[in-house]
Length: 326
Image 1 (cartoon, rainbow, N blue to C red):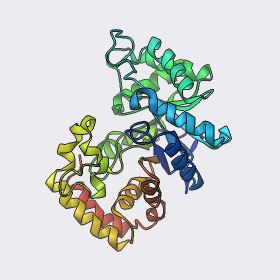
Image 2 (image 1 turned 30 degrees about the horizontal axis):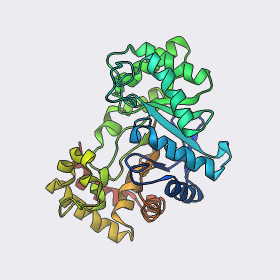
Image 3 (image 1 turned 180 degrees about the vertical axis):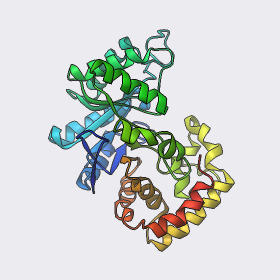
């Protein structure tokens, strides 16, 4: 496992990391989380990603219980969470969901710290942008969170390049803690935001990336070529919005082409896809997910594939990916 700095910061993350979206609490309990986090840590993973909204806060509880049981030295691992949607989805308070105002953020961090059983969160993201709250208010609130010692670094997730630059400029102007990282979706069929939209930000403001969905929600495992398996993510009622993309005929045909390259490299299709995302030097860490230990171990095997992605191999992958990428 190699380690990369987040942009221009001094914080170093493992090139592959472990996230909890969909799986923790829903498919993975505290015991299973402890087993997988221990295996990931033993393989060199030092970054574990979470969010307040995952399983309506219960994902943080599961991860926190696992961390407590594992008794790792606090300096040895990095934990993140994200704020925006809130926990009270059906409640009446407009200041408790879909916002990044100071009132919500100041209470959201306290809730996450309590659920995870930690004194501070290493990395806190604004999970989406909020067009209804002045960017200055959000930047001040995030910077204050760090000043008070409740978080160490902050960043954004799925913000536009203009929004990220505006936040950075506010922090620069007022000598506040700046956003250091963005967490966008990035995989073989979703590339333009990372490779084009953010291009100027890497050099201009030192933006780092922790990317999610390297397997395109499972499409790049090949499991959806003959429909939606009953035990898959696409079959979950709350994941129904993914089905159209997962069963796209053209992309599944491309998956078959990519599998031929994976076979030649003596790796699995999922390992090839994860390694491809990690091959981008702008990516600080690729967030992987797993619902069981075997899945986790297979995904982490991508570490050995990164070095195999020579210019010739990348040139063969490029037309297959680019033709269908958004």
